[in-house]
Each structure stands twice: as C-alpha cells, then as structure tokens.
Image 1 (cartoon, rainbow, N blue to C red):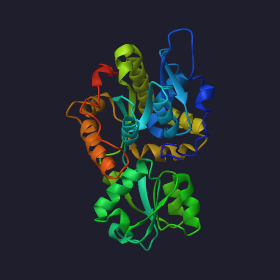
Image 2 (cartoon, rainbow, N blue to C red):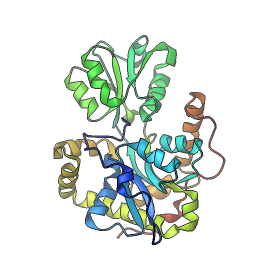
Image 3 (cartoon, one colour):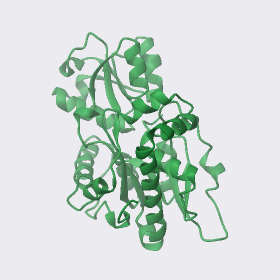
Image 4 (cartoon, rainbow, N blue to C red):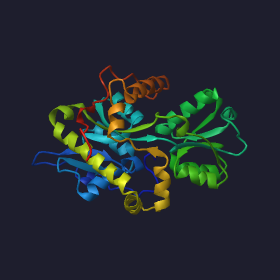
Length: 319
C-alpha cells in the first residue's frame, strides 16, 4: 500500500471499471486520482459539479494505479508525489507538473520504540519502510540526519498497512509511515522521533499531465486547475462543511480529517506560482530527488534537462 492509500479509505472501483477506454466523442482529459487528503479539492469539485466535462477523474485505490495507467497510456495525467512522478518519467512517461496540491508538514513520520532516544540509535535496529513509496525517500533523509548508511540498519521492506502487525509481533523496532498508522503505533507505545515537519518544503504532491496534452488539449488542463482551486476555496472557506463531506466519503471521523489536514499545507494560487516558476522549489527539489533516487537505484537516470514545471495553465485569479 503506497502512502497515498490513506485514512482507511474504502478501495475505489478498479480503473478499468471506470471507463478508461472510451470512444465516440472527443475524449476528456483522463485524470488518475486516489485517496489522499491533499487531493480532496478535486473530489469536492466533482461533488459540487465544478469539474467541467473536459476532465474526467478516474479513481484508483493507490498511486500505483495512476502510475500504471500513465505508463499504459490509459491516463493523460494524475495526482502523484514528486518522487512518483520521477519514477514514471524514468520508465518513459513524458510528464510535466502543472499544479501543487499539498506539501507534507508532518504527515510522514518515523515512529520508534521508547528505547530509541535519538536518530543515531537506529543503528542495528529493524526499520519497517515501504521502499517503493515516498517512505523510501523519508528513510534516506532520516539516515542522512542520523549520519548513518543503509547497511547500518536492518531494512524491513513492508507496505505501510503491514507495519502495525509487524510492530505488534515485535518484528520491527521502528516504522517510517504516515497517518493514521503513526498515531496507532503511538497508541501502542511508539514514540514519534522525526517527521516531515523537520523537512520543510521537501515532500510535494503534484498534478502532472503528459506533455503532449499541454499542446493538444490545453483548455482541459486549465479546466482541471480551475476545478482544483474551486474545491480548495470551498475547503478553506467552509472548513466545517468540507470536513464532514470528506469524512463521509472516506468513511472515517471528522476528527481524523482535521488531524490529517493539520499535517499538510495546501498551497493557494500565489504559492503555486512561486513553486512552479523556473527557479522555484519544485524544479530544485525534483533535481535533488533525482540525484538521490539515482544514487539509491530507484531510477536509472536523471530526468532530462527540459523544464519539469509549466505554470502557464494556472488561473489568473481565484474568485
């Protein structure tokens, strides 16, 4: 289970059942999306009818569904973490970032046994981590802060939804995870030792589309972003209503949704413009991530020198 299968969401219908292979009239932009608190503005936009017919949300259970759909040519875009985008690009997907949905500010967590008091004490410990997800990037950053190498710890490669069982069985000493698993582990005696709040503006969720779509269907890309910001405006200005809508959709409690929202930053239009600029944070972080992922064998080569971001589709204003 990738990080973005979050907060006990019900498994969405398989993408094939969502009508990936349409025919007839001009096809709308097929946007892959999966449960994650940062993607809620698009779910809200769809719920309120603010999503134009030029865009279709195809709902999967996790990021892996969207990544596979992009590589198979069944999707035109998706909501992914930045490192997931780089993995798709490494496998041949020509993607461009057109929007930033959220920045992790505590959503990604290292939980440890009480006997581990500081990061360097991870040496020799069994650390549960989902190496193919964003947790793998978190582990690299944690080891960097601790002054440790990968072979200084015992990596236990597990989907995050299996960390709790491994913890209860005494098979791991630490977990690189995210909410709600982090809070459950803490209720089982775990201690939060490090989280993405210690890595400001490092872990991003983004909206990506195939570069060809930006040339052939630019209106749909603009419509996608307008819908996202409409949903975000409702989420921010009508928080009480939004929390209950999201909790109902995710089959969880309003308190859990409020807690999830407290672990992310949701960039507004001005922040998106800064992030996506040619000298902005996304271009810089993507290059840094690329170097890390290549050195760790997560991707085969650095992304090409073409711009990874295109801010030209952002709305001029949000009313």
